[in-house]
Length: 190
Image 1: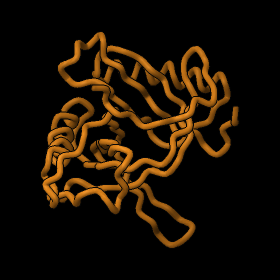
Image 2: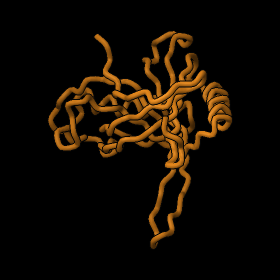
Image 3: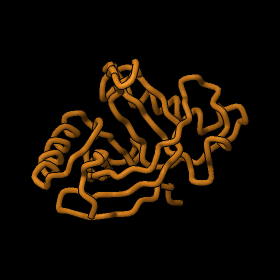
């Protein structure tokens, strides 16, 4: 049976990336302190616990793809209009919840490290690649992706998002990976 993935519309394609529009989605998220490569296993265990029934209703929730990770940065609102950003040493991981669920209908997590949240509709530049989940490989792909976007005068905002579509048991050279960069308000429409 196929694993559910978030729906999206492809607005445009280039040789190196696609511009996609994603509707709002609901995710279960946990934040793990640690480095790029070691934090994933810890986060997966916490989020998998939630969808496998570690919630107040003891409900099992279907696994979806991708598993999304992003370096954390904590925004602390001060008096308007000042925003202070504090960089943390960790990563936020998200499991997308299956489409029938909303924030109101999802079972509440037992683990306080799991937070349910809604991600608003957004436009994202997406670079797909296969292979290793190593930080080195991610950074190489990210650099080439950012160069292609710069050449095409596509402006992005926020930190890169690493999306993994396969289980850790998939052969490394067959893994489907994506890097997502959210488009800024100044990014051209197709």
